[in-house]
Amino acid sequence: MTDVIKAIILGIIEGLTEFLPVSSTGHLILAGNLLNFEGDAAITFKIVIQLGAVMAVLILYWKRYMEIGLNLIKMDFSKSKGLNVIHMILAMLPALIVYLLLKDTIKSQLFGPTPVLIGLVAGGLLMIIAAQSKRTTSVDTIDMISYKQAFGIGLFQCLALWPGFSRSGSTISGGLLLGTSQKATADFTFIISVPVMFGATLLDLYDSRDLLSLDDLYLMLIGFMTSFLVAMIAVVTFIRLIKRLRLEWFALYRFALAALFYLIVIL
Image 1 (spheres, rainbow, N blue to C red):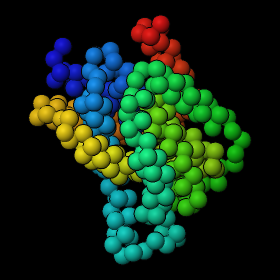
Image 2 (cartoon, one colour):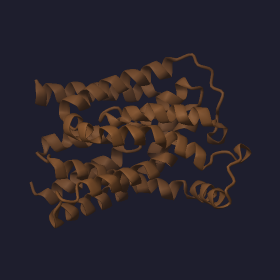
Image 3 (tube, rainbow, N blue to C red):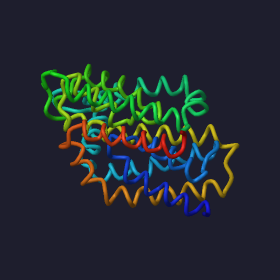
């Protein structure tokens, strides 16, 4: 199988899994292991193509991004206006700090099948705990999220630095435990995903600049475009699904995937 075909397959997987709390990174690592698509350049590839899928969020939430941008230009951060750039900074800052401190360890120790299986199971357990929690929901829409809750959701997002946990799975679970509705937290998660993945992609490309060849960049472009196109088709349906379907169902899928991969590859 050629590397181009592998890039297309991984792009499809990324586009289909990015908007569900099942860990797109985990799926890419497991699929990359099966396809023998691994190494430093492959790790960067898996990060870059996630941005392709996330870019589909720009299309879905463009009005919200315009509002946030205009308020930023006006330096208007009034809570009465709802979600603003301060919410986004508070939610992104914890994971950014942790990633900058531990990025070498994350890439060298956690981008493998065994850590992913651990992340899938642990993340699934977190989702079940969050879904079963008796915490009263006080926030029904994204504009009701407080700065404190935004920061708390950001702390939970740090878990997603462990491949297999899932960014949306971690943040939605955190939101439920902090009193926000699943719908409100899902909207918030996807809105902050664009700057998060944009920053992560640029940083990783810069760090890997001496390791990448023109062929690597060509494969990344193929994977990026494939994931973007697939995500454009899936984004509306899948985001609606994550807002309505209880987290326990996604947790069961994660457990089944972890068990299947363990039996087929690792055992």
